[in-house]
Image (cartoon, rainbow, N blue to C red; front, side, top):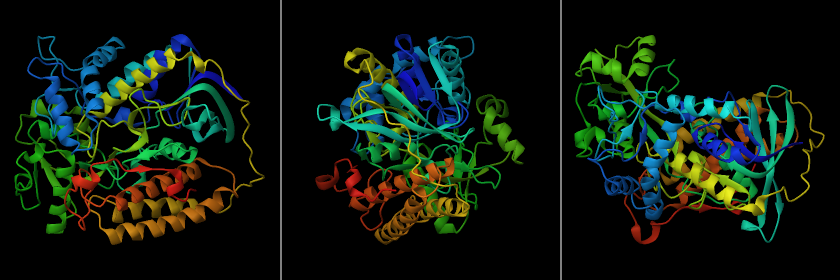
Length: 533
């Protein structure tokens, strides 16, 4: 039994900020399923959106966020996040984050991305997430009250019924697999912060790192928390098309600095789809590229910034220039082949304005959460901002509530149920591949009712097979992740099939228009709606 005051699942920006803020008041255990820096925070290239320029306003940032969210943002949450932004930026700087500044000036060098009406993206070249993570991880790893435990993957929450608690249930901790020792451990805590990131690995092609298998969303759903808006899965328009690139992301900031999208005939096409052209919100750009590829039969389109000065390109996008050079491209002299790929999950575990889930003692922040900020489509570079604001607010709330001063129940240890080691791991690897291909082919950028129904039937069949396997054989990390992407896939299909309109990131060609009268609402799902693994 491992006990602590605070248990944090995830070592990205949300998890570490929460850990740093509560560590002055108790012991903190941080579980990360891989190395501590292997998560979406590190791979965030573009930057973090916040109003820091006198030429910008809170109202403009709010308006841009609401416009991108296509009617489903919670305006109170949007205002709260935007207005708290500058203070959270100062917090990052105080922790050692170094954002780019203009030459001979203390002013930030602000970028602009799709959907933004002003330059408001703070960045550190094209490796902003890596710089933020470097700074906060250095502080967290040096803190005497924070224990960071890599290669521990959470399996399920430990819960108990409590009619007096929020949602009638309390979270006591988690069971987690120590991947290196293959031992399942019990972690108990007074409070748990869920910050496990996104679920891009539910799709065959994704910009996400391998750890993004929707673990927190699936675990919370199984434990009884509501999950919402999973049909709104953002596909980043521009990932590098190359067999060795593993969907390497080409930041939206490049289009903000003038890069153009052209087809293989050399024709620029975005002005035909939206007056904002390459700077339209991501859902519009991704669908335009998808349609252009289907129209021409080509496997990719081209992103060209070679008309800009070479020194500017190399100074602004050094990471992209180096990686593409390794793959045989000269960013300064030729266009890059790009395709859309699954990027960001706008849905997730429902939380309130303090980051509280439906379950007592469980907070949630970052991409795992559905806070009301993003609505039907996330505005570029609002993700790191949201994670910061909600991690901070959750920490404030946790510290203010003394009723969580002890673990309320005896916490049961893991029961292996006499399971045995499997000699048929091929079922896991085959199912992994089939789920992801099914999601990509049938629940992708453009959907239809028949495709969604076919996807539902196939993944329910896989779920039944994996359910029998899960309860018969010893747990492995691949099996844990497979179980979770199946759950995420079923929730996503359920939400997509139920929404009888097209909005934001969800486009169904059988119902291609908005229906504000009936569907200006979140798609909330309960465990009773879906057969679980």
